[in-house]
Image 1 (tube, helix red, strand yellow):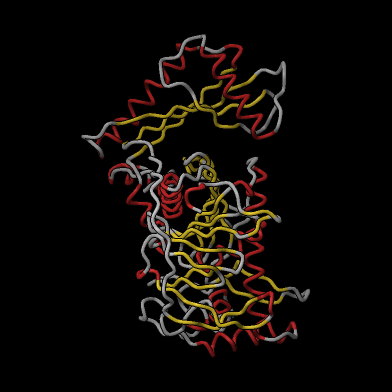
Image 2: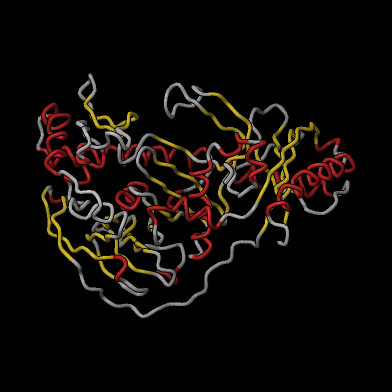
Length: 466
């Protein structure tokens, strides 16, 4: 699996191992794109939260945003500019130090802070009983009642709730002089606000309005925090796929064979040379088709051509889709129109009488068909039976409330219930706040719809899922 979201051959991986550096998160983005197509959600915020980090990716028209730059070996974790820049095709996402093992502490100014330090899996959170003493997000979720200590990880690992309470009491509650339950809620609230702030910044940088997006949440810890995060971002719909705890691995199974080649060749639109560009794409195609054909010898292949363009005098370029046919001089106007449309969507205007320069040309060759949208099929609604009840801390009441727990493997499409509730499965749990109702759709996704959004009933998205 490559960082750009496609499978490649073993030989290509050995030759270019740097292309695999971000392969895990890119698999999650592939899953989110597939689920977006099935549920007809064209604008999506992909939210992947695991043990050490949370990854956020924007998906537009079933396609994840991509980039050509990535940093590895950052000296300061998650801080831009502190690592080694590499130029590889990569799914563009923002990554922050917010995972189940992220450590909570009170800093020298008396502020509650989360991460970026992580307890990892060894020793892990205090509740793991492997020697960890520091309070983590997982410990907070356990104290808040979102996690069942006796049914964690398919009952293969019993959690120590007393150890979680002790760690939170020492690390957070005592320094802030607040009850342990409020300290645990503060940890959860802080990490969700950190993720929400990162998502806001990422969306502004890319000209996206998150209120028009739905969220697709996965990863071991993602479903636990997705509904609360969606509330902070004013997102009206959250989709949690089946087997969401291993979403990135499922994405690997959905990914096509693909290979991207990028070449620098400076040109302005005023001096557009179609013959030169056609020769360049012939060279790119010879390289890319050979690699993809080796991994998918009997599959019809498709190609996508793009150019990285900017107005002369600017410092950052944007990626623009190019025609697939052999270019002629007349295509200059088509390319200019595409660039101006994209630029206007990002920045709200164009710059008249300013020439446009092209820095690089890219070609992606991949196997498989385009992602297909799901059908309008709908199943009869029914109220499922609860499997249990559990005391969970409800922030608005500043108290624990006994709420229903549903067992996801027992639910079939059409199951519908209101929050607050918990939906438990073998390797994760979804916490549904009282602002959402829940439904299992025809593809066995859990769909959470916001009851009230900015004073209005939830709108947008795929109406057939409501």
